Length: 109
Length: 90
Image (cartoon, rainbow over all chains, first blue to last red; front, top):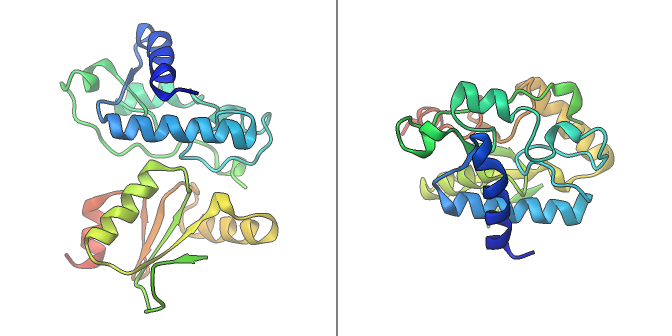
């Protein structure tokens, strides 16, 4: 998959919903590359910053965009891995901060 | 377990994922600080070895998030430069 085409495809889907790509393009491309790799490895795009177990049903909460993105972007301005940010962070009106993990630990094994 | 390019005793261990950008940033940061470190890419482990490491991480960091960094017995959750510097005495 061409990574720039993948970027544009996702941008068109998520920007209208208020989720922008991080301005750090090196980070974004690194994460998109990892998502593509995870698709090849697990057959689903598990968040690159979470420990996937290989069972799609068990990992459905961390398939990008993860179930925690909405709450994290709302509270911290970015999702856990930093791929998606809020409009205010994207526009530079707000500075990024550390995003703690919301995923319940019992789902990690 | 993967290690840096020699067997000298390290003061830092990074529990990481091979695909995680925060983990990569933490590894880069420690290298830039000339800190010897061990790292364990947990996603590359399987079976009992993986279960044991995950259990170890949960004891140190109950959220079991990545990276979990241990420096001189101080546990740092996530790539947080200021906390890493403090633990290293930099």
